[in-house]
Figure 1 (cartoon, helix red, strand yellow):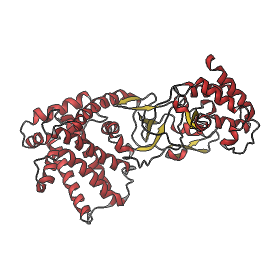
Figure 2 (cartoon, one colour; figure 1 turned 90 degrees about the vertical axis):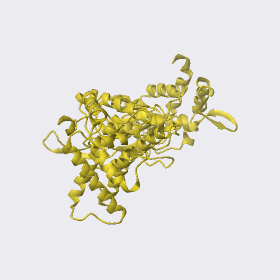
Figure 3 (cartoon, helix red, strand yellow; figure 1 turned 30 degrees about the horizontal axis):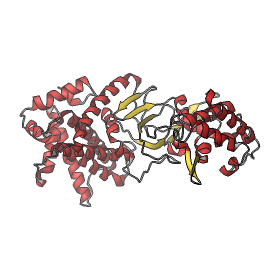
Amino acid sequence: MSKHLPLREAVLLWLEHAGSLSPTPQSIGMLMLLPHWSTVVEAVAAAAPREEHPDLYAKVDGDGAPNPLTLLEESGLFAAARLIAQGAPVPVSEVADSFVTFCTGPAPVTEQWLLLNGTFPQGTRIPLGRHTLQTFTEDELRQTVPMPALNGLQPRSRDLGLITGAPFLHVPDPGRTVTRRPTWFDFTGPRAEAQHWQALLPLMLWDSELLRVDSVFTVARGRRFDLNPRDVPTTIQVYEGRHGRGEEVEVRDTSEFHVPAACLPALADFCVAISAKIDAVMAGATHNRRILNRRARRLERAARHLLAAYQRTYNDDAVWEVEADELHLDYVIALEALLISPNDTREGIADNIRSRAAALFLAPDHQKEAMGIVQRAYTARSAYVHGDVIKDQSEQEKLEELRTLRLLTLQVILRWLVLTPSDTDDLAPLLDAAAQDTGREHHIDRPLRTFFTTTPPRSQPADITAT
């Protein structure tokens, strides 16, 4: 820090004059006209030359100069000056130190942060390929903002309280531009759940409770994390106050997807195992062997339709009636993507999907149940695509059937991943043979029992425990 002392002193001197500002909102231009601002700019150029810190610079009249918007807005220096002008107790020494670190430290790698609606224990940190599932403490979150010293002095601190301990799935994204505001809708590419399906799928396969992406943020740690309370779904909880009166507190809205601390090691092991299987399948996406390439595309298609259905399902009792039939369609597409064979004829697809889905289960009763679920799903699908409605079924019965189909789809995807050959063979012929009790023990039952014994999901499937 000693070699950057001139920069620190220049900032401290400039901050002394911030108190002379009016407490009303000030423009960037006014701040740049404050005495000694040119000294700050010169000190930045000396301490952080363009060739070492190009992210701080912009071209002005053809000459490279530190970008004033970067120095004032992104660093948090503008907010500090405003607070000083308002008479807030700003720790100017910490502000100056943060500004020096901002200018002289390495440029952060841009990341995408996906806020999930589940609940995970403190200290969660699970690798999922390039992604990491992590819960952050308040102190860790404070380090992501450019001016931690201002936390608690401006609205941002309220935001950090909402997401402290919340689960984020974050991944480096160096090519992404840091935007002024986080956004859920990104029209430059696929939706977030589709872009990040390889990291989301293992979590969904571990527990059948609904897990969704609530918000997506572009983060450059130490530079920008423009969190806004409107981007975090909240609910009101009532707690008993000191005098026995109920007090309303705004908290982050969460789903039933809850991971106790005791289950965290099992979840981590499961994610490692499933991520490895997903990676093995997706390695064929660029392979010159057609079956390997097709297998990768089918897995991605199944996962994307599963995730699309999840994003439109708030809970099992809260599905828009107009979308319920579309969710049936998503699940059926996911099943077909995995269980169809290149040798299938169009007329026999439904029968083959029903038979192969059943062959993935070990006990006869569960095989029969799976066939019934798939049959009803195809009936609902046909009614939807032909503009008809399913008669003699109440709204509650429709929701229960939709949940049953979702649980079956999860099991089919999980078992398909466990059993899919790593070579150029197709799984469909093995399932067709198993349906005729040929090679079932070797190709289906034994591998499934081994996987569910060594790397079980949250709850053991009933057909596994029954055998």
